[in-house]
Amino acid sequence: MARWQPDARGRLAAAALELFAERGFDQTTVTDIAARAGLDKRTFYRLFGDKREALFSGSDQLETILVKAIAEAGAAPFDTVVAAYRRVAEEVFAGRLDSVRVRQTIIESSPELQERELRKTVSLAAAVAAALRAKGVGETAATLAAESGSTVFRVAFAQWVAPGNETSLADLIAEAAAELRAVTSP
Amino acid sequence: MARWQPDARGRLAAAALELFAERGFDQTTVTDIAARAGLDKRTFYRLFGDKREALFSGSDQLETILVKAIAEAGAAPFDTVVAAYRRVAEEVFAGRLDSVRVRQTIIESSPELQERELRKTVSLAAAVAAALRAKGVGETAATLAAESGSTVFRVAFAQWVAPGNETSLADLIAEAAAELRAVTSP
Picture 1 (cartoon, chains in turn orange, cyan):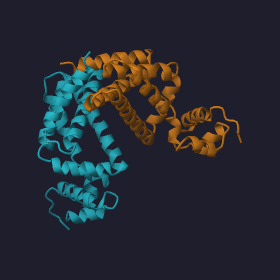
Picture 2: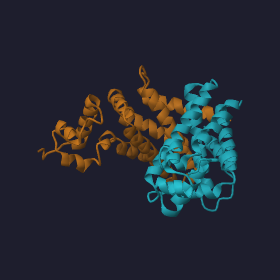
Picture 3: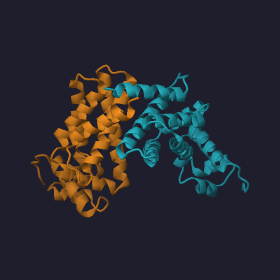
Picture 4: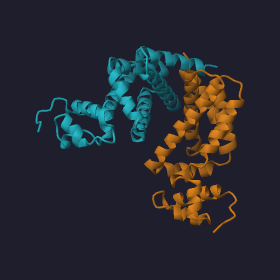
């Protein structure tokens, strides 16, 4: 089945999102997901470690964009991180609010998925800190800038997916960064 | 066995720490822990949900001190949170570096324990944010101050347990808070 597979990864991720939303995460099997995508189970396992991973297929892309944006930037560490998250907002999330909301609802329905999301957040902040260090930012400053950027992104993201919101994620990131500065300024 | 139990909770936590350090987390059973503490398994399960919890018995105390310190403080949100963590440093951690280092080594040996620690950190930050909101701090400012305080504490804690460190946790928290301010200032 399906020897020619344009974007098998994207099709499987989309099928997983649909099925988790329709039936619930626990009630969906890898066989169901593969069938919905018109592919087989073996293809699924070649591309994803497990059922949960199908919901986190974007996070490698996110890390790649963040790390690249940081490597290219010339500003102070925290500004660099905030600008990198705004680039992610524009390149990954803009125009996708509906499907991101569906995904968030699925994640909130399962402690197992919440845990995976939490671990992805931690490893993303670690990658950002490493990218800053690679530019010569000191050990502690790199961690603090990366963690502060992660906080700003999480706060802005929660506001973005909240019911009734119409502000763009990039603008919410800029606002949360300004508010973090205000909150921590002496 | 042991009908009279002065601080059964503390004895079980100490026995768990000893045994995890001696034999490893996976190789230690609840029966072993109870026996080392001179108590029975039933007493263990009355006080802890599972084997992992014996290593996190201090985190309720930590939350209580933090929330109380925040309720009593009169300063700006981030200052309040930093001061609360410094109080925790003095009331919970001062003079306990050796056993805290043992505990950290155990946690780092097990993904299961790392995950539990991560979840405790997240729920502690949520409790801090709630305590700030209860004082009238706005929704977003409360989250940002709580998360920034959590970042400062984690950075300072990692420096405190690192080999060769001789600075107190309270001082490291003050230094990390000053560096976070410097990193995020425009």
